[in-house]
Length: 592
View: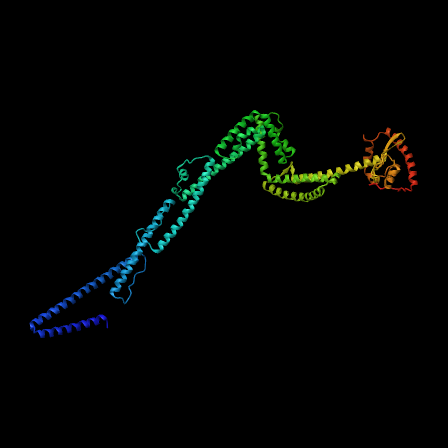
């Protein structure tokens, strides 16, 4: 049983007891029946009125609760629709009062959620408007009057995050482009001219609209400025090259070049103007000193001919080179030739550098090869001989490899340009082969000259006799015996301890080695034998040698024979002395 029911039963029991007590009191007092009825009616009316009032109030409460429940339910349904939430469902088994309370609580929560969403939407709309103003973009597509859903808010947040990142990237790009544009304008000595350029160079960077069109326009502006800067740089470079050429050709002194030296580095507008003024001044000087200028250009042309390996025929094809008419037309022809040669060298620079490298290696190889045939090279004291031999061997191996590499490059170039690549008027391989053939021919010529010189020496030995200097040991005393003078048939000869001349021997105190005595005796007895093959190969040269201006006239032969005959008697006398000393002579002596 409920507590309220217990209280109701107790109230009824109490009312009954109260009425019984009132009856007892009325009996004791002796109150008549009419008054008892009246008083009982008063009690009944009072209790009934009180209960009716309570019932009325409770019924009103019930109606109010039902009204609230109905209204809350409608509002909850509307909010669920606006907030795009699922429909609200009441819990079963709840009293009217609990339902009203639950609906009221849910309604308050949903109204708070609506308020938060609207405030969040307001903030996002403000950020969107700010970013749209900066980047000149259209706002995010959302109904500002409607309550946004959670997904819409998330999408709006993501959109603004991406837009903020894009804004930061564009701002960084704008700052970078502005810096480069500022540098280019400084180099060009140019100030902002258009409204857009003024906006770009404004100090208030936040005021610049970071739209795609503006960023693209910035890039176009920077590209134009860079092109202008590059044109200025090329113009200055061309002017500097021309000015330097004119300085060299006109032989301008260094002190006159100093005022323009500061303009030979930068490429600003003022530099261009200064260089143009200097070029105009030099052009005037050029016209005033035409002859010396043309002569200087001819020297430059000669250097370019050498760098381009022009043949004699190609050089002679430029007839104006030898023209003595130093006119302006001749000057123009020479300048055109210089331009043509420079372009020709630039178009084939890689090949010419390769040929030049081969030429340098070839020249070094010829020098080392020439040193290899020089007897004086054995007198080196720094190990240069070994280094030179190693270097010569390396060049001998590297030259064919370089020739092969150049051949491949030249073949590719000829196939591409459909014409021949010429070095000194001939194909490169033909030029290389010609150099090798010339080198081999030169070596053969030198070899033949050595053979001829040897044959000539042999012929002179056969005609006039010869002596050989043989090194002797020094005497023990450390002092040299003074030379003695002999007279052979009226002719004086000098004999020293270390020499043996005209078939005479040294003094007995300082005798030469036995081999020297034998060789001297045999060479005094008669001329040495020349190998048969050498004489047969050089009969014509020997016969020519006898009739050369350097040969001894016939009139002198008699005198020489007399000298030889006179010395022979002395020789026999010395020979007899040598025999007494048991000196044995070899019957033959080999000659190399």
